Length: 415
Image (tube, rainbow, N blue to C red; front, side, top):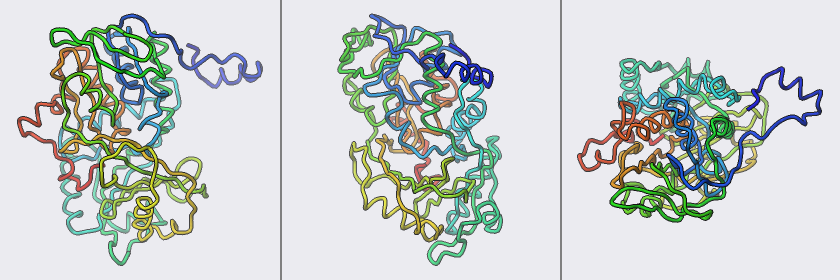
């Protein structure tokens, strides 16, 4: 693989850019692999990358029924933060945030990480108490956050309206090293690095069955034929339940659509990420000038990847009180992603009842921000067969034992 650099760009300019090679190969599947990862989204590709980088396991196939990064990885609002209350959550999200900071150098691919800061508005007295509690917990966890005053909020985001009639801004939980990254660049960067290690990324290849013998996985049936494997990792977000059913076990998850939209591009006016959980809306400005806006999940289970007007109207109506300028913008496009949510709003990284089969799911609305940390922890689980510290609290057995990691109660929202 040729390295990307300023010199490479200059060299190819003289060649009329005819010397660039494919970023990743598109091979036909081999008969057998050491590890098959189902799902070529950010989490699946990150798992493959860290299997190769940290453990030297490169006889790996990443199988995708659609196109690479075409699921939730390409359908999110790119927020990166780690200011969670519960210790296991803060640990894995902070690992992810720290890996994002060096990802462009590690992958030799610009993922456009922008540590612009993430601000979670306190608009009720209950939120003030909750975020102050989270700030104290974060300090103990080694996560840099602070609770700031309304005046500081206004300094950081001049376009905000502090004295809304229903929900005035009373302060905010501020994480200065949070931010955003380019979602498709993250997937492409991991894919390029995995392909360079000799791994196979197989697109347009749907898994139709899981083959097993004596309680252990032996391979998968796909639309491109049967493939043997020594280990199987299922990392397919909203379709996790379907794959688990093929393996003969059930998951405590439900699939729901999460919608978002972007406005027409405007001049730079906002260089932080704002989350307003009381009205359930969040917003940032992209590098192209679009206002990226998201809200809560749909109120019913579904598998749609299309937005719906009534839900987007509800989200924008809530944000207009805090950001009056939004009312004057036109919507450019909108979309939906299929997320899988657990009862405690925390993910599952776990062994399964099927031997040599591992599951990574249940990230809810927080999947993108977790990609590198999730991949790191999942690679440890797949390589060792047992979870290490990052993933140990997120096993399937916690639902039987009642040891929940309840971020919905802690934060009042699943993000």
